[in-house]
Length: 208
Image 1: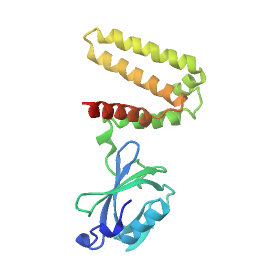
Image 2: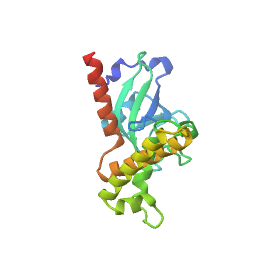
Image 3: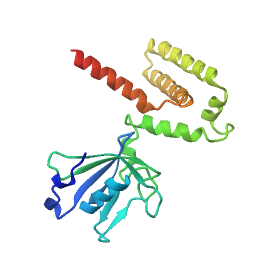
Image 4: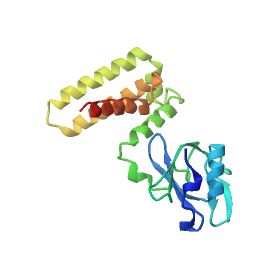
């Protein structure tokens, strides 16, 4: 448990910088500042509160937009003067309507795009099948989805035996997409599969 009394509020005139990170994708969402009372309210309510330096008051993130930040974990750095808040956001975090206050193009090609793709699949699942291939695939049922994963896996194997790397990348992308649609249909989250891999790595590392 985070002990507020161990934190160094004096170093920055009673405020601690608080980095906010998506607990699933690990994307950095924003930076805010907390005084002792804002941090206490955050701990009590489970939602992120900040101290506004411009308005000189406490404010709850989402109080006007409804895009609240639900806290999963709060940690502190080695100097006890900076906070890291891992959260589950309820909608866009930035006032521009974007997921993050930082440039999203920076993360576009990163591994966390798979988590963004997972969110896109969830969104497409609620659309009409006439405009959404994802919805059409889901409507065809589990057997068809599993078959598509198998077909795409075969395409990857065939492409891997050739020298066209661009084609291979495309086939790998097709396989990942169809696998993630199947995961959605089975109610499995990407983070759960990542956790299985992490636990396997941990077990093998411990055995060495």
